[in-house]
Length: 94
Length: 345
Image (cartoon, rainbow over all chains, first blue to last red; front, side, top):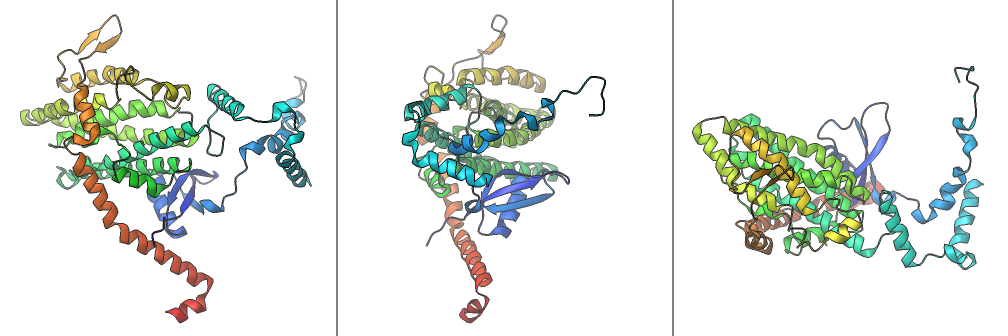
């Protein structure tokens, strides 16, 4: 029986101190092969010091149609940002 | 608590949409209007966003053909890996061909975010249902061709791809950014090779000129038919998949490339080529569109050979793909039920 290799999402940490960042996907039979393929595909020019691989089917993504109820409540809370507050000119270090 | 509230809200929205105000009910007409206004506002379209079917189809066709071009593009250059004149050149060429494979894979993975199936895309290439860039149906006859491909073919590709880094579909744009970074090495190594040949012995210079003679016109054809003849252009620019027309891109390429040829002391094989002071661009001669369509239709010098090579690679690799999958499944089984696996063995 013919079966397509599963799809994996690849995340790369470009240098120590930075987050892993999604860079794309690839096909591999298992996690080990996904790591090896990610090495060859996404780090040919020193783009990374660490790789995460996650099988695509395990990722749950929010639905763009839900983005209003999800993110709108944060939009009107301007008081959560420092720029909401005025600090007098002669007060420093704040 | 907060999460529960959101869930309730989502639930209400999904199941009680009859309670919503009329303006909140989305018809496909205003979905399309919202989509177009995002495009107009330079907001990128991402995989799960609503998009018109035709946009999805156009992108799958364009991205997969782009991917196929990268994969088939390995063949003319691969032809010279074993015959590279020095270890330095061999390493460079190996790295470049490996990059082309990588570019193909970035693009296939971008096409898959639109719901395309990888195996199906590959089948479309092998059966001839999907096209790839016609340039790769020309043979690489002498070593200078490797220089000419990097300089001209990758140069033309970069002109197109730099535009595509700003294309409206996010995953395609991101793949293009990565590809453009790598293409720059491809073009420079090609030009350096052309310099070595052009400034070398008279025989070497003749080889460089011969390569330029054969690759110049096919490189100009890479931008596709004239705007007046191009069937996909209008919609593609409305959707900002394409941001410049075929003729604009071709003119850009000619304008930057002619001085590069002059530096090499080579002659561009076009008697009508001259600087037009008024336009601020080079005028150039008529493209042989009969040749272009003939190659597109499958009658180029290497069309059959290229697809044969891809088919052979695909078929010869089938047992490896199947064995690797079976091995992974067996390993997984062992992890889940160590005892059963031992008994079965």
